[in-house]
Image 1 (cartoon, one colour):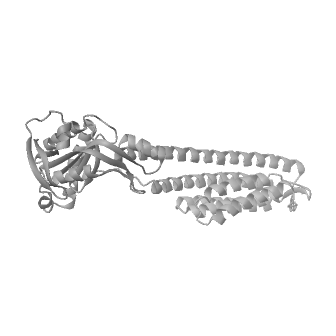
Image 2: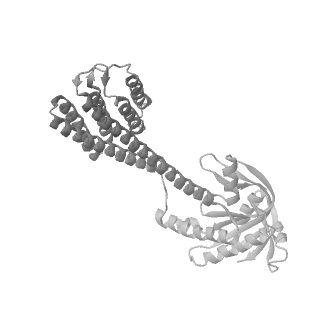
Image 3: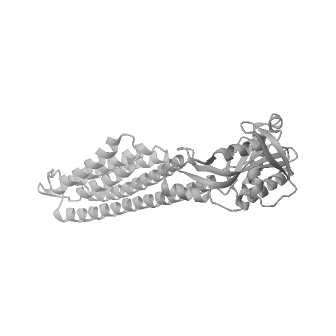
Length: 399
């Protein structure tokens, strides 16, 4: 017996962690390649102080790559934040004089803010995932308007600083573009996943409920009930189920019931009958609910005959069926486990007819027999004493 269950929260979290890992790993490699390139440049330029700081940035990015491979995504993500901060500090120290420096710091703070918003989205502490990106935005504002003055620690020639600033600006814009692209991919994949699960949930609802009821539930979004003045209700029950079930293993029992009731479900769909529910080894169905049909009684009797034919292929089973016609109240109940159900004397009477019926026979009430309009003229009329109903004239139809 195979079932296709799905856990949306687990699948969503797994996919999100996978995307975060890809994002962190991509950013780590970008920082590594960029810092590696700059380290070679500053080494060849003979500026050992800058080379040393860039080397620290490169080491942090290598640590991020290592932690990402070890599935330590939190450590990898935070290592990139540290390496990014060190890189910003390095370029912020580049200057030609106390009033002129590398003006790309604000852009790198924006890069870190975007990165932080993404990788910290899974943080349980809301202050961490809100304060850190906000702090980077504030620092971008302060450095752009020179509220934080340049310290002028590492002096460069003006022409060289201009070239470095241009390359650095171009790099920061490219990384912002890459991060934005990764954001868009995340959103696109998330939307695709939502559509996929929405379709699967819609399919599940359509399998649980009649189509018209499912459509109404989607539209109204709440429980509802309606009065149906005329329909037919059937109960079918396995004769001798209890002694038979005691000889079966739990798996064998469930497999056999699933096999049997799946055939019933297929018949109900094929014959336009509405399955209401299963109650242990009993099967409840209706015709004329939720959508009216004039031949509801005849349709349900034909369905009962089909159930008896199915039972012939299972030598361990025989069925008794009871059908009654009349008004019912139908509707959706439940908040977490919604079901479509019927209530009223018609339902109770159909259940009593089944429980007082006969193996391989279908017992119908006078109301149902009258609604058959001449079909099954050779039916046997008799009187049954029904629990809670007293004596009642019924008709026994041969399967």
